[in-house]
Length: 274
Image (cartoon, rainbow, N blue to C red; front, side, top):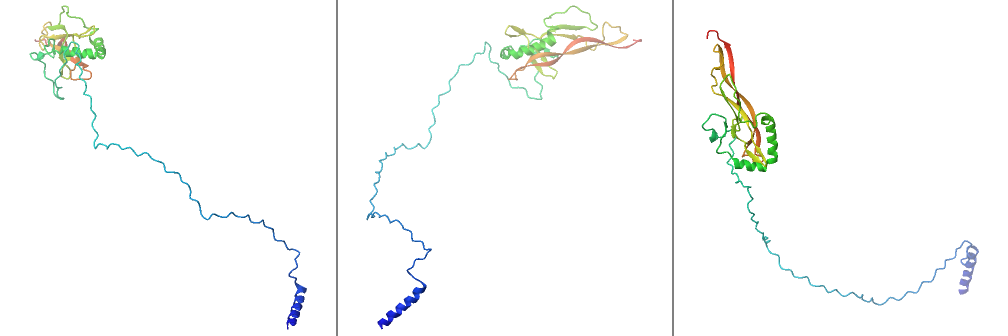
């Protein structure tokens, strides 16, 4: 029995060996590459050593501040110094009254209370000190205005004249050269005229000529009675430098005034049966 098995196995081997040899190496066979040997690994420690930490720094304790106040104390101010009053340059400080209400005519001055004329040659209430102080304070602009008025109205006409020669007129009249202190302007307001005021070494004056009819409306005495005639008062407009105490910025101005200029004789129709 054992022999039969061995023979059978040999026959099988012969039959198979004719076709495939398991131990034969094919011609296209690539040999297996040779790998390097593995390096020997260090044995791992059984435990990890604990790291060494830096010691904690020692901090300085925070300083203790005093508690904040519940309110801010007010600073102590130095009282304002008291300065001595400024000098008034020899003149008292002017005291101004309240300005007149708009739309109303100012009160007639006392110098014109007893006359019907619209100017005053004498005035007991003339504000000489106040006007002098204002002229000293604004002398540059004041002298400019005065030069304008003097050149147009008085410098080349009657400034400096005080008398007139005897003249014969058709109507009786009174002529004089005056320096008014107050006058009523063309708007009906009374103004203070700048006269006899000193600014440095210059005296400011304003002179004008006026001629008033003595008998206005009457017949001309030197005209024959066969002619109708009548004495007529003529007027002329003058520009004067005035002082306004209610203007706090510049209390001087130039205004226009209506003053009597001449007394003319007006002739009418010829009357044969007069």
